[in-house]
Length: 311
Image (cartoon, rainbow, N blue to C red; front, side, top):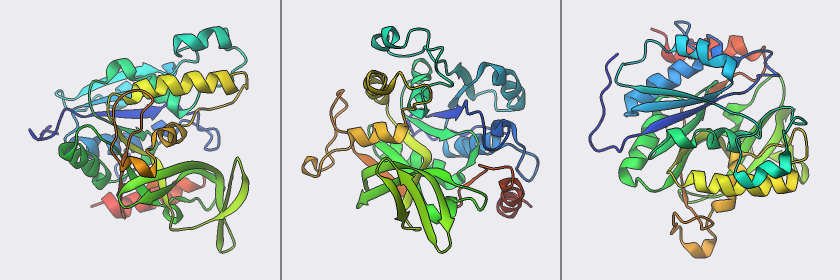
């Protein structure tokens, strides 16, 4: 595989969150071979990113997965820079450490915002952020690369239709988005979303509600600039002060993005200063998103990937 980079695109890094335990799936989804030639979702995403002009990747994972992932990806182009980092419970802003002690009461690290924070020393410039165990399609990475070509300082996301991201085998968690034109106005984490008859139902902090099946959702396919790490440091500090003593509390990346969105009066003019607003451009795609939440999803996902990618 040869690596071809467009001179018009800034150096782009793909940050891949691969530390999940796959508790509902029953194993490491990062290593599940679901593609038509036995590829993992991670391999398919890296192939799509390379086509779009990405030149590096950072995989945020658990220590025990570095060796098998490194072996899995040994055939990547030599020009492509691959790095690993481990998401650790005590890798927090300094102000947080006195509050959490040895964090022995924690059952896991601090969520998706913390996972991206773990990559801060390995990224220099625009980045896309995805999950290791999801399939996004070639277009998602091309949209992000084109977006950075148009404006290398803006944040972005690729959004999918809610109904196309549900499982027939149980509830899923999704970031439900509201937009004004091409700009994100809100993103809220909803949990345990599932079909109940002809309705889609989920719940969040305010309780259970019926959701519009054609709602746009964030599937963790973001485009960020370097200033996201300053924002994450502030968000994690605030989160630990409020919820840090809870053993399974998580700081979600969509919630951090929500805290940065400009008000209607800001007219989408964003700054990169800490604490200021940041507009997020929304790329809606009709391409398929695929993921496995439960073991029963595997057969259907394999079939869909064969239809999409098979010869």
